[in-house]
Length: 136
Image (cartoon, rainbow, N blue to C red; front, side):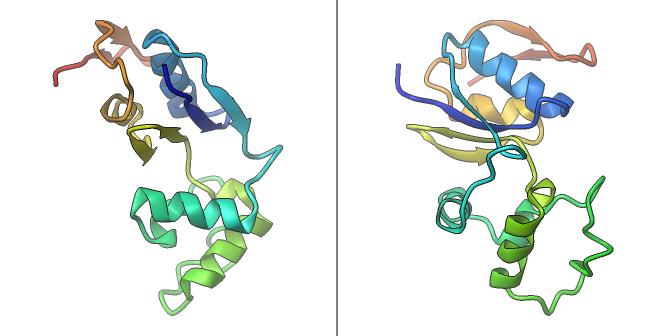
């Protein structure tokens, strides 16, 4: 099995569900609690590039200083948005999962199945009771 890394927030249900799905696939991932150990500029920009998204797509609004910082200003540059995420890691949406098959923001959590080596582990019940069955 190849290495899997999850940028995780243990207080987030989506992040916990994603971690549980990774483990159900037979992998114990490297867990990076990004609020305690935030990525540096190089790593954050690398993750954004690997996900093929714009920095704005990684911003989390709910429960963050997004509005107070004026991040809804569409004239802000990608560099400005990355800088805000570096200063306030809570702005980084989660969970981000890195595998040999790709890097993905896993919202909803079942998106992780697209990049796991062994996603066909049967039925999975999310914390809210939703049943997930992998269908390639």
